[in-house]
Length: 296
Image (cartoon, rainbow, N blue to C red; front, side, top):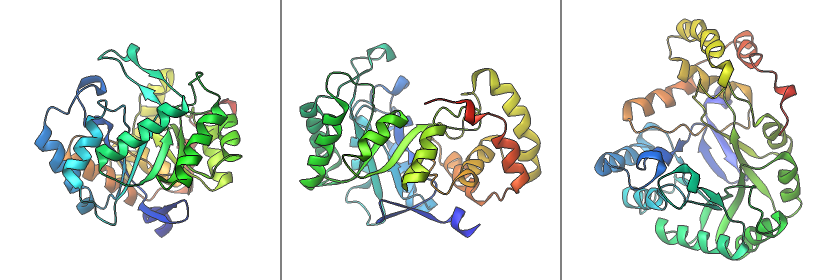
């Protein structure tokens, strides 16, 4: 149990607590514009280390840009304990999600990293993700090659991948050391199941997004919620806390990054690490979705 509740190491040298913080919610509606409660966002970010959270996940497209700026305002100069991950490769042209797109042009990726470093006031980012494998304006291999070049130049400490296929993950590993991957994976939606397996086999950290969601399973949502309710009640926790606890039991590679705008909710998320599930309880939740039938 101690291993599950303690820390996880990214790339052999970045040791973080096993529940991180996804900062995306500290933006305006639909992840567009600055977070309306600016001072509240600053207070929440400044509370993270006190709550035992020392890993923050952000991206240049959150806002865009406003999320990284808020993190800098709240936390710079950064504690030696803190690890910040950011991403590049998504673009956003307005409030509507339909304006969201992908760019893989290596020059654009280089600009994205340099601007993230400027906004965060960093000389080197500890973990930098290619935010999407969907871009078709440049070969995927060239995109990874540019990240590797920037790593060799000292601007990136470690490279991660977000929104990629298992095949792209394998391709990227032939070009650079990939230490982290993010994908949609939770109690109801296991879309990232193959990537989780690939991460485990390669020694990479796996950060599931929407980790506490009970609704991402579509038609599964009601069935999943019903199955979780008695287990959550037996442990005196919310179903969302149980969902996070199950992830930590599911794999030693797991680094959930739940987001919240509330200090009370942040404390609930962190407390999920203390929920000790039996093997039967873990199996009951795991078997709610046939992961073998999922194709990346």
